[in-house]
Amino acid sequence: MAWVVGACSVVALAGVAAAVGQPAPRPVWSGPETSATGTPAPADRVETDPVLPGADRPASAPAGHDRAQPATGRDENTSVPAGRDRIGTLKPVERVLGYLDGERSTTLHYPGADYVKVHFDRLLMLPGDHVTVASPDGTEVHRIDGDPVDGLVDALRGSPAGRWAMSVSGDTAVVTLHRARPDLLGLESRLAGLGVGIDRVAHGRTGADREAAAETGPGAAGPGREESICGRNDSRDAICYRSSDPVAYQRSKAVARLLINGTELCTAWRLGATNRMMTNHHCFTSSDEAYQTEVWFNYQCASCGGYEVFRSTKVWGDQVLSTDRTLDYTLFTVEDFPAVEKFGYLELDLRRPTRGTELYIPQHPGGDPTVIAMSSDRDANGTCAVDNPSYDGYGTASDISYHCDTEGGSSGSPVISRSSNKVIALHHFGGCPNSGVRIDLIHERIRQHL
Image (cartoon, rainbow, N blue to C red; front, side, top):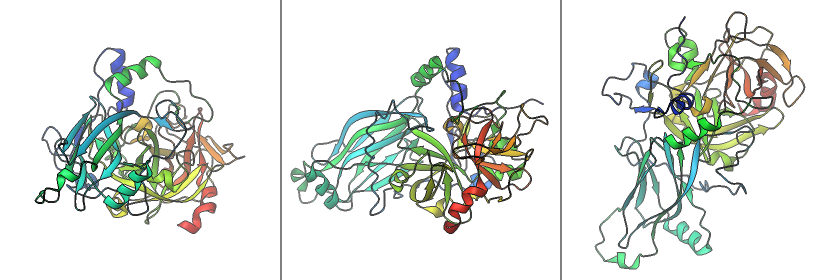
């Protein structure tokens, strides 16, 4: 059988392209009705009708939720918390959109990047005015409404908290200050202190970044790391299973890519029919961190082995309900939950896993569009299966082990039984065998929240 191994997986292919001196491939963003080439998108109607951010759709934090970057005391471009993978770059920027003889729009362009995320250090706008961060063609628009009172208070304190905007997919973001009404009273001459300031931008790796990463090469995987391909990489684009294993494909819809602090990655998934999401404790642990986290649903390839991807639906993380280091889980909620309900959810299989139980893992390795690890050249029958049902993780016999392929960014993925199509473990470790925390143990800690 000729396997198509995640041709839509940008990071893996980028290393190959850089090695032969060719431009690194990147996703072509595809809308819900037509692809970038104008051809109809595949008729699969969870993708068929994805919720796109419409023009002027509010994307700012609600009252009490500050999108300010938490003080970490670390270099954002060189230090990454243990277990999290870096996908982007953070750069300082000095742009001001003002009321008095100032620009009203600015374009931020980073060739080859797969997303651009803008941070504002000042949002001093008149009532009714707002700022948008949008893709050049206007298909993705995120709005932030200014609060002149809070903004002025922050400015007078001398240390405004600032705010991250939701990222824009692609390599270009257009930031525009919108006036609600014309300046009929000549007030602009008195508004020199007002305006919108951009102090930094996070963006996906450019072609130059990928070439540098390819030259450095991946580090050797070992115990305690989540980026472990065991033997040949047998994972495939999720959409490759749409016909051959439609149940596994539909389960993959409930899995989301996390973009943490603008440049870091993990995977998460919907747990149950209510507003509940699951990821690893080493991905984030607090509501403050959840507020800085984007949750991307429907980030999947449009065709098996292709390069186009469906337009993802992005929401902010919200409240952390429960977290634990030993069992390495974080249970949290998202804002705008109705926007992601249609992508479905996963259920838990609370039986103790046994050796030989066949598995699959939907995931976002390296932040790539969803792949499913189901086949394994390390297992006798070629299918991922439980190797050791009493494997030591952070606790004795807290994990199950397996040889399903995973990579950086796969932390927090669901490990699903092929027989029940329910979650039996939460992936968190690599090392070949890789391992996930037993979901029956996690359930004991979180059942009051379900």
